[in-house]
Image (cartoon, rainbow, N blue to C red; front, top):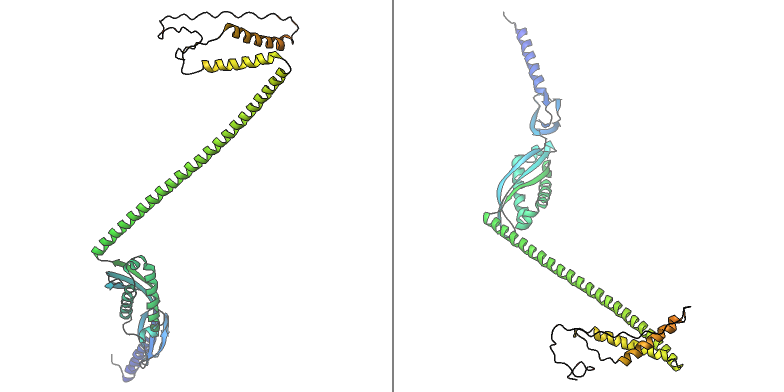
Length: 345
């Protein structure tokens, strides 16, 4: 089949139209931005979806990923403020906000962000002591984020996070830090033990003080009550003596007998309750005993006999006390004086 000249022209036109359509229609995927250049100059940025450009006049300049991206910062040596050498690595997260600035303000965007982050890590960590470096990672991350984000703003980049992954001091330095921590904990333990001992001694002293105060108060109360009892007893004795004196002054001989019998009985009780004697020989005359008992009996008759209705009977004579029978010979020789139990007096 032979084609004429007109047919060839039609076929060429169809092919040209198809090529123009393919050159003028651009599809941008989600998460990307395309820059359009007209004769080499930036004109606009294509958004995700179907877009039309002028064929053979405009072209796509740069295809940029605007999703948040992760950048691994390799391990590097850092000299701290106190001249300690540590190894540190990090990770950075960034996102393209302005495609035109990212495409035309900096060449090799990822390498630029990486070198900028590494430089600031050395600067920030080098201005801190080792102890501060190991214990303040949040402060380091905040300073790095603030510095790097401020540096990449002209590039249309937003650094969302910078994190220090690992900090590795030298092995000998780690051992020294472990010994230091152990010594510090032992010192704290000794301080706590000393404080506990001091508090225990203080509490024991407070307890002894309170006990002594309570004991002194108890002794004072007991002494006060004893003094009050002695005062009451003295008042009673004074009242009794006054009554006996008044009775004697009135010529009542029974009061004298009662008073003498009471004192005589108290003296006998004291002699009999002595702890240094087992056998008591009392020099008592029969007449004195009879007179004393007679006086007591007379007082009893006067008090109780008059109150009753029956007749009073004469007092019975006292029964003679039988002499004690010794089963063993006496140790001491017989005393010729029966009224003096002590022969040496």
